[in-house]
Image (cartoon, rainbow, N blue to C red; front, side, top):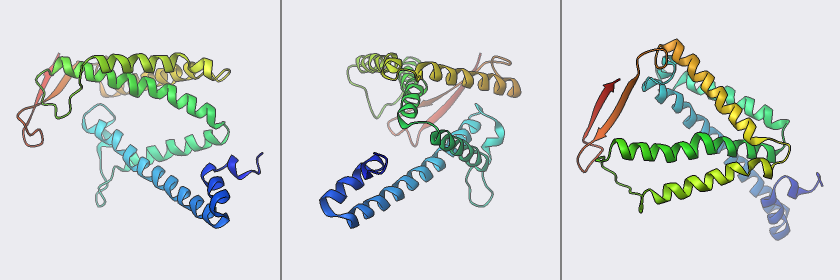
Length: 218
């Protein structure tokens, strides 16, 4: 029922049944404030991603500039704002289940699997790196996580018939690869230029006070 309060807010429905309409209205306002704060902080945090990438020379250099007075990444914030607005418009014409499935499958590829691979690569390349947090029984937790995420990914199409989340996630990754090639061509880096490998080695017990950067070009 579209007119039922539970269709828009389960928390408000529970509070209305338990404490009355006044409590439900209060919870609804708090949910709206929390949602706004979440989007606001996510937008500010997300704007730092292209900024840091530009500072590490793996993104367009124009994104590495800060506002002269307030010291926030202007271009990164504007870009993330546009992407957020586009996502909002897409969400207006797409059901929530489809969005969740698509975002989950994309996250499995670009975040979950990438993080597992990154841990293994870092462990192999920098075996002597100071690690304040250690993974017990390594690499068993990584293998278990890898299998679990692959199972979730493999069943995505079956759990969402007709939505094709796997195909859409692969298309999104392909679009990212095209964007990378365009950037690499513009910046004249690998595969259109020399391949550079820069690794940061941390020494000593306190990694915040002692660090050394060792670049290598291949």
